[in-house]
Image (cartoon, rainbow, N blue to C red; front, side, top):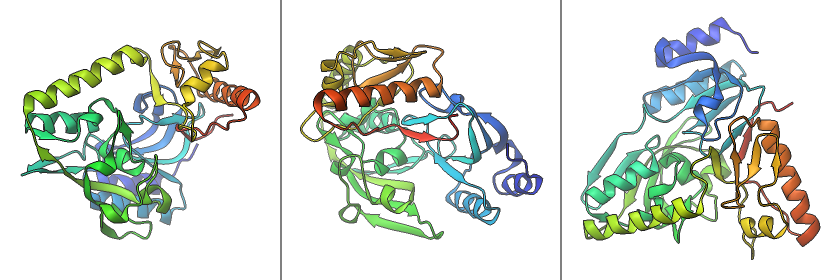
Length: 306
């Protein structure tokens, strides 16, 4: 456990003592509802506070991790030895300007899609059920049901690794399947401009309801999970490979391959991070042995597992 009063004081000076915590359980901040404590947990309010918090971590030679709402993350049972900086509820303003949405990185993607619908703006319907923040969605070019962030992005503002604020147009984002220049260069997304089109509100809402029904029918939304556990291998679907390997309902401890959708690993209520990782390893091994296909995790791993 990292204990440094000077580091604590510096973080409190930046974000305010009400927004800095010690030994914060990460299971409270991931959709898996799994994870041990982070030594320090900071919730900044502005891009300048984010920049300063990262600078402090570097000056103290302490690792830091940028967190949204933890929808694609598995934190180890022993937690994280460092500082978690959460860009979420304190950093989520949204403004509609004509056919554009200017939104901070901490806004939930689903909330943003709902506000677009209410303004009769079409193009973001695919995102209505994605649980992540705008920042996370941009970084991994999140997508569903035939739509991706690259279809709606105009530009983003980021914080670079050397502490500069930079605006990047969509054409320079190198957006691919679950990747972007953001993840490749270690940028931190601060806000985004989405370019949509005027549409019929009732039609937009109907499309969102249709996609919601499909999700409820096909995905295990009643259990904590991190969404799709593995990336889609080229030429295959991860869920089908796992199902064809006979792993529907396969479990390790409290973690289980969903019987509803084999692409999801779920927490049945008492799963540990070790349960999830051991299950993922076993699934990957079985699929590789049977089909010669390597499954790459879509879920990110953070912290100490053993």
